Image (cartoon, rainbow, N blue to C red; front, side, top):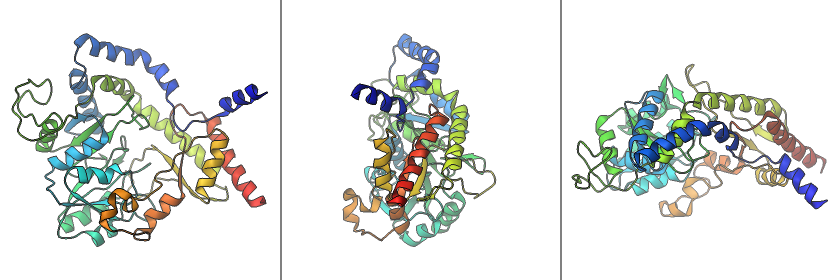
Length: 396
């Protein structure tokens, strides 16, 4: 009996993320790229990385794409390449993954937090203006979950304050604002290819997007121990001149191979995510306790959102997550603690209540499973679990 029960739970389980079906379908193309890497014998920072950079430039419209080993390193190197000096302030939204702020510290700067806008999760341009000081040199909007931040408002405020804009567009592949791909609305942006991302590798990888050739050249050097010169961008000689203190942030060619295989179906995956998100919205529209469903805000007629995450805001969030887990449904909390209250930033002196919108999002937001392998029957199962939780709660 116990064995049958475990089998039934497994059959009904909806993991927060899986891509097993995707890779089964993509294996022939993936294998072709991997064999090419093996035949060349160059496993890091080689021809396959160049091929991926060129393909991403064509997809995003960026003049320059520089592959690195993670989205976090991409942010650090981009800030350094844009001229961040020790102690310079960078305004960051208080609601984001910790890397948005830790990258500022790792690049030598000081994060300054701002609250998010009331109708979305992007930085509030009015809050940006309120926290900027004479030491502030950059603002880093973060494009979260399903849409770009308000780049019109951010851009206008930044210009008025004399700030450079560097985008944390790690989640934003495929998103566009005013016809321009996210990450190309300021000095530059980044992409993360962490496995759960809309375009995900089988491990860590990232990239910098920019239209500035000097920024691109500097990032290309910094990712490989600061080696400048005509052969430094790829296939560098051991004795290439070191012009700056860089790091080892080269992209592995095997990750580039996986990403190239998946890039061809990216638009189809984006569309599949939109279909599943629409189904979630239909099924959850009238559920008591579900207070906010995601939607792409009508900032401009030509904004293109991409559902990387389907995040809802709910009553009794942690209890709901536990209820779904007991039914075999995976969820994630984005993000349980706002950045200004993270212990690693305690020296900045913030207290609860400083950024109430960010704190409310951390208290109430819950991400549901959303990925191309997900079936509509899985979506229905997740939504039924949510409906049952609030029905039982009302009855109690």
